[in-house]
Length: 624
Image (tube, rainbow, N blue to C red):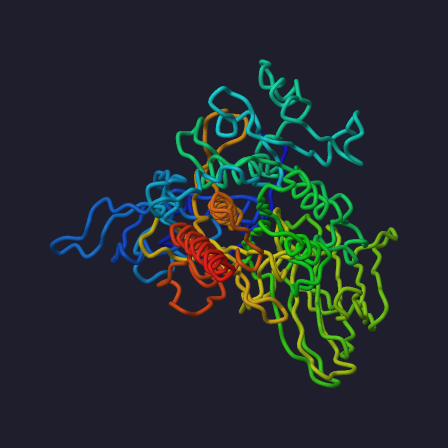
């Protein structure tokens, strides 16, 4: 007998009809022990077998990956036996659907990258006749992410040489040649020399980390393969298999992600992230270039005013044939957004649930317009007021040993947009339960506000339901000229929006995301395997599909002798889409204007080139 002690059961109501194994998995997920869907990784999933009254309804659920009908309804039997794979945090939601009569364990399905390429009409045989896109040849495709497996065959040519023009590891040891102010740059010659060794990672001194619950080692490799893998290892190429590659393994260590400084820190103000964008454009030089950023957090003003977003806007406006594509984020179902309107001398409560067994830091940001003045009060789960922090001041609550448990800053007039922001930071020692954030309207002209709970991949906190899932796009997904991408499931004929795909608009009312692409259950290159693939879901997977199609667009325009401004690129993408879903001719807060259509994108470039040729011919005739 071991020496462990036990405590009394903590009971909760559950459906006795649910398979106990699924109940157990759902319980562990609720308590934060399993990694859930985020913009950095695929969700934890469990294979299921179900008895349903409608296979069509089962297949239409974005939660169900790889649906298969094992036995159709016949005779007196009114149900079908079906299988699929469901993210753990969505088990109870699916189980409660009226057409689901039973849900148990099953075997997983294995969709591939090819489904997304075909659905977007990006396969070479689907592009318009006479296309010169040539798989993105002559275009630089930059990836800003974590973990680049340069040894995977999908990023090597037929002779085994690297396709990468450069890797900048921002966290690496200082470049001995002094090329970089920080971090380490690796050249093609260095990468190729390492690839000739038995252990290329040790030879080069740079390797993608292994993929674990607390590491996203395969993320950047997976993203790069979707955008531009050539299939030499996996057998399935990405969207722009002939593009030249540049990878920045980003650090953003200039941004605080813990401690009291976090309330004055925004991922959207990371100098290192913006320098990564500048680095790729500089390396590309005169070549057309598109950059993919499948990263983000929940905080920030969500109005495009962060320094990263402003910097991206200026960089893509300064020269033609440049674009930056950003994932929309995966926070739609996470309960991380709230909004409301305060009245003069009134108050309004936000209930912030910190779950049991949450051993992580938690952060909330509240943004409201200049001209209004709010005070903020914190009330513990036991109903005790911690105190009020007036506008223009900060406050902290200490534990018995004098350590900070709660820190709040009530800032007036952010330097980038003039608006006001309240930042609240809970240390990992704070008691779990429902914390009440009470806003007091001292001076109210407008009264509106938006609040976001910062992303936490380990034990996420959330607002109490009912949830407002609008305005959930990411912290750097609100720029004026970036191209922001939502995710849908290309494996289903209904192409449903992915349940996790975040929703616009921006806080200042602009239409983001612009467009959507396949990002659900995409199988692409797996780090440290050489040839294998792994399945991931997220807008992180949808964004590089669009980046790859932009590379095809830029290659086509380059071959036809025309230049495209960022306004041209955005206009072509938004005019070249599929609808139904969403409704034709309207912007949808999750799909954007529609689902991307590569064939229509290339046709639009061809038309633009023909029009430019015709105009030049007309001007020449007039001169003669």
